[in-house]
Image (tube, rainbow, N blue to C red; front, top):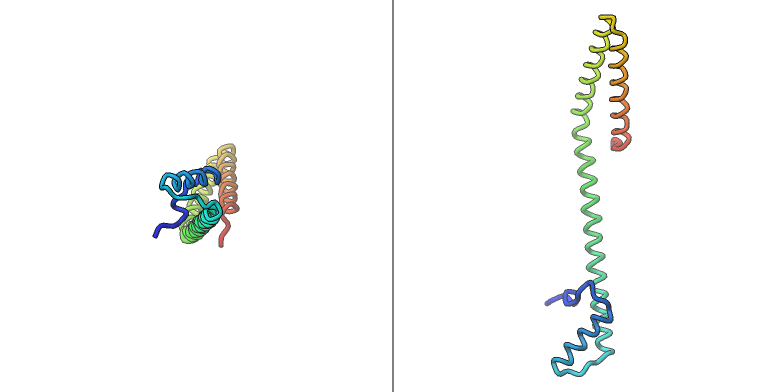
Length: 132
């Protein structure tokens, strides 16, 4: 059995829909019972609303599941991300120490600035996606 709502064009107005159904009844040689037609159209509108609500609920459910899975991925990747960040910090510290040892205090300062910018970037990323 076909859902009543499937027989309707979702973009036509209620008046257009009623006129189309009246024309179909007249073309079939049937008398148009406007009261019965109004009830029929009201039932179809109700079914359309139910379909729209089910669709919206489905979209919201899928969105929630996607958000949950993304959070889970971030949680699983966190140890690897932290290990990579520790390695980067260590590299910067080695560069700073080498520059200071060589007497290149401007170079050491530049590397410290780069490290500070990287730390700020990581802090912003952490704030955007807090740990669960």
